[in-house]
Length: 516
Ligand code: KIV
Ligand code: ZN
Image 1 (cartoon, rainbow, N blue to C red):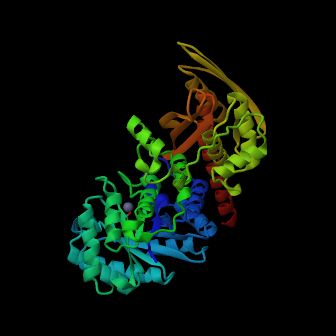
Image 2: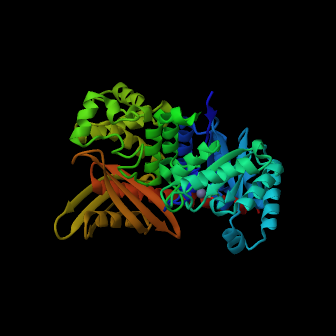
Image 3: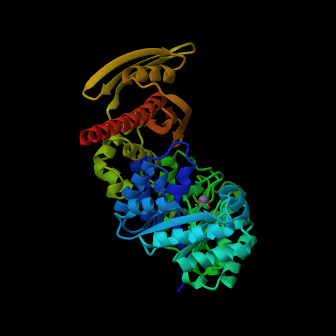
């Protein structure tokens, strides 16, 4: 029997830390469901002490996720641990992950403590966490730059205090694969109680070595790998879990270990994370890049025709990439749309067939043929929309030329439909002025991106904006065959989120005043 490598996903914590606008609770739950289906063993859902929003996300995920262990991060501080436990207690079983720095530079210049103090803090934190759960993970932050004697002392103390997983992060992505594998090997040789814990690794990608370092650690005996989907994370990111999963599968002959990952979920999960996090994937990224399975040179193509094994070490189907021969048109029925979604691997809970079919028909009328990537884009977009959105674009007309543009719109504002027209230095500028006037919100845009979803000139246009409102950043997405309309949808997505947040704050304030 092969040894199991536990896959610990921190897309929603380390990955989310690096986004320009934080994810909503709904978006985080969507990703958590996808991770559960992917088969990750542990989902690090957030850092509950860091904000009320993070607390709520961890609590919501802990309530809904049943097949992966939900975990929350805490510093080695009593209050952090108590708040993490509070957010997780809705789950039947959960993990608390507590950490403190161990490298000399962090201990002296960041914590300004002695190493003995830091060991005492770690012991106290692990013991406190053990009061809430048996499943406690302890991380030695910046372990990659920690003198090995100090690291051994800390690991031994944390295990004695009750940590069942010891995580060795290369926090700044500094080590080389044989160096990092050597650190893990030394821990196995020198820490007397090492057999009482699982050794985990958490590598950052500053020098592009996070995956290689993690695999070197696995070869040295680590049995948990931490990382994120698409390698999201602080600075250059974390170790890409889809790469780890496919390395372990493809080279199981050499490695003799396995994971619980359902590999055919990789493609879909990666796309969802990229979409919701507004983080495009580079085309030549291993495993999930758009070119990862395409063969360009004539010699390669010739080899592939003769025998796929000449240039293919894993199949696109193994990560869930499927190409369907039949496309859909406005004459296709609901069953055909559902059948395509089934073949793409989506299940009923992933989307609402009524909404998807209605959106599909509108698109098919405009576009003729609808491709699988269109269906997926429609599904992601519908999942972002809320049926109870206060502001909805009912009508849009644009006149643009080489000098000025004029836009007129009808906007549903709750029960009322309002009209407005504006002139701008382009159609999007004119449209945004109409929306600002009708909604009463004036928003600063930090970023505005337009991308084509799909291929050819009749692909869908997607607009992504990062908006700044009263110091908080919001991500808005819009999708339409018309890029001006997509831009309007993206702004309305943001405005609806702000409006909803203000309504919730008002209700909370009222109930607070009533109880006083
Ligand atoms: O990179 C790091 O050291 C971390 C720890 C909190 C595990 O993210
Ligand atoms: Zn990290």
